[in-house]
Amino acid sequence: MTGHLISVARPRIAAMALGVAAAAWAAAPLLGSGWPGLALAVAGCCVAAGSLRLALQDVPELEEAYFASAPERAVRAALVIVRLLSWEEIGCVALLWLEVMHPARPWHTAVLGALLVAWLLTVHIAESGTRAAGLLRRQAKIVAAGACLLALGAAGAFLPGATSGAGAALHVLAAIAVIAAAVLVLPG
Image 1 (cartoon, helix red, strand yellow):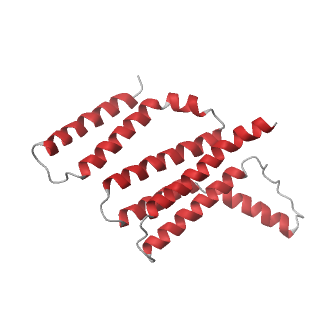
Image 2: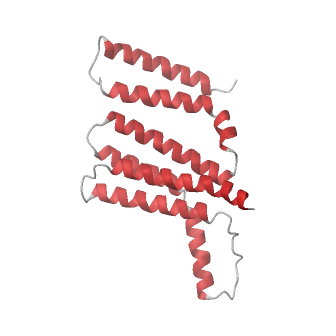
Image 3: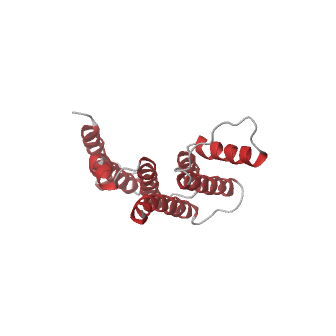
């Protein structure tokens, strides 16, 4: 029994930790209040609500009761709200919005992209209950292609105006990588 609880809790805790790490990474350095503060607050609320949804995943849905007490109705409404929205996707948008407000930092953005993909994959593993090795084995080509494109994008950001030499070679390499990624992901 304890082994089962640990195997169920491990991906949920990992998803929460990756959400917090992504929010902290995107916030550093925080640009102050205003829009960056709002984006960080939205992202923090989404990480918390998504973590709460994962923690309450095994709680059965309460049946509609006509004569339910006020606390029972409040608990039911809270469960519905927590399970209603795709908190992780909203959190990703808020964190990307926060990252866009920072000055150009290509490698910082690439690390954030990797953190967000890891967060979403871990949430999927926690929600579905599948084994991580099996899921990642089936998605290995897509994850590898995405990681390569993320690295090429970050490297290309360092050479935005280069039209000859290393910059041109990087653009050709990026085009080849996009074609290779498309071939890898297409069924067949």
